[in-house]
Image (tube, rainbow, N blue to C red; front, side, top):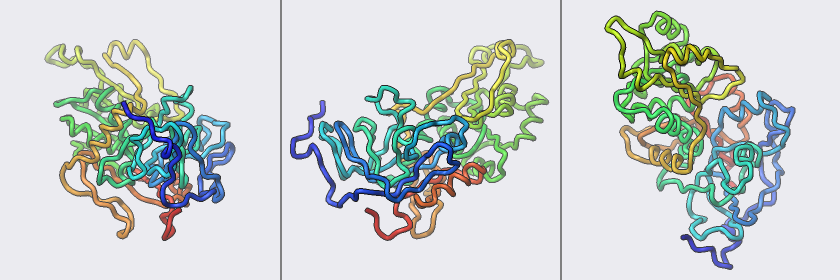
Length: 385
């Protein structure tokens, strides 16, 4: 059991001064973009809380979903939930293992909250599109040594979500045929994880650049939706599992065709009946997905959803990023900002300044981003507070 912090360290400040105000990108109901506030109050740590200096924060399609009012939210708060940072203020009652010299990732769910799903940093509570953020101590998970914060952001949400979907819910294993529907920010990581687990991986994506990326990451074949409709319709293509990161009416219908049980000229494949075709829905959209229960039963299809992951899943995601797994990769950013890394999963990461977060969100809305984009406070200035 961890010891409680001593009285002298109950309220610890890092050596650098923390200003009273900061730049923050604020979600405001009725606005179709975030409000950039350069004088937002810097938070302070209360009982059991830690203030982090934000090193990087990933930009997620969930933010687009809320800003578009697909699911209206009446609250006002700083967005950004894929947070990496270093403690600069430690509140009373925080365990002594929290260090101001350690880089941490923030797990989305605060275990002390009475409503952890609807009260997350960046989704209801103030988040990481800011210079500082306050979190509960039990949300903090150490980042492995040597892992760049820009890369580490993907473990706080996207890769944790992918790990839960691919490893835990889809239970992908050696020899499986797996289709990744949508090779975007999450999907391109899912391709790599499914390959790592021994599957033969296929991809569907409307964007040529996403299909090319998937092939470069080890996908066996990459379809556009039109070609995929043809091969599913004529019965020449099937897989054991579909992991759907799009969640549109089209993707869901085609996924059912791809995993449906079929009687061939050689009779019934009873081994296939025993393991079921599987669809795991991960994407969020405003579309309604429909199915006929009789079709699902007769086609022997299991349908499930997958959301985020546990703190242990997040630790596994960090491990996948930190393990040496082949060639070195670079962040997609200016030469003086490039970060070299290598891991089992190598996400494509582009770095932008916090001031540019609305431009990033617009590009994400228009499906113009391949991989993940991360915003960094102070990237446009020589010094950070």
